[in-house]
Length: 219
Ligand code: NDP
Image (cartoon, rainbow, N blue to C red; front, side, top):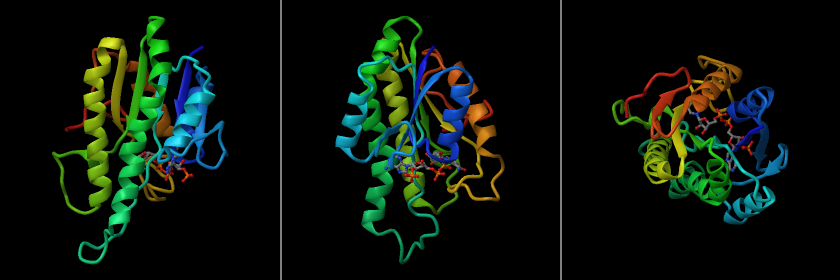
């Protein structure tokens, strides 16, 4: 049995992913800030990250899904919105939190990679990270998701020699608290598609930026 860790697993895409991976036979540790999943983790708090990593007790982690994220600047006006603390929060969750989580779990990922099957890190970014399409607005969200796309691709280069692959994903426009009721797909559909992408991720495809349904997304 393989071990998967999913951050932000108490609702939305993270909850659906944790359920999907569990039904597919993985041992899953889902995290939540408030203790409503298997383990407590606030990705913005280094002590919480360290405590979560310690709680894994050195077990091998085959798949780490960095899913937790916020859309800090929904409906901000260019002239009167975007206060500095909003920028800080958006980047703390969507970028720094992803890095700190990956860094803290490297020993666990290395342990999985060492037994030969390789290990995988899935970074949930967004199509809004793309430089190819820049329609304006949502500056904090777009910039933070672009940053985490860049982070994932650079980690991919560093970790490939160790047998750890990193994929970056757009999960679709998904009906969650963040995506809203008018979005294209539900969280279960997104989770099924993403899980298939994670299973296909190898050191040969590391650094890929893909959609939930398997299309390469323009950077
Ligand atoms: P939701 O808003 O429904 O859920 C977000 C999750 O992230 C919650 O579990 C939330 O926990 C968690 N979270 C937020 N801040 C922190 C933190 N500091 N530490 C730990 N966990 C935290 O979002 P979605 O499920 O829709 O989105 C999941 C991912 O997919 C995000 O990264 C998002 O940017 C991305 N995405 C979503 C799209 C969509 O259409 N829905 C489209 C493109 C990308 P809590 O309940 O405590 O707030």
